[in-house]
Length: 118
Image (tube, rainbow, N blue to C red):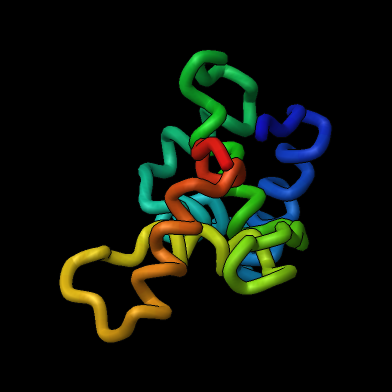
């Protein structure tokens, strides 16, 4: 799923503002960058719409996951927050603790939310 600038950039701006130091009014961009797992300069590029169109999809999705209120319909868990979906998607598939876990991992891989085909 792709998200338009008009939806993502206000989420990013609010996240930065919420993390700014109340005394200085700065620092929010660095805090958001840490949460996203990237550099403050990339956050700045996203803010100013100066990031390559072909690469911004992954960052927009991560911004929505972290700072939005989206929910998705998970075939294994029902309706869950998008952030929980990404956490489930990113779990390792190594040694499975149960058959249910294996079924859930298989469903997750096939889920359209994660680029799979049902």
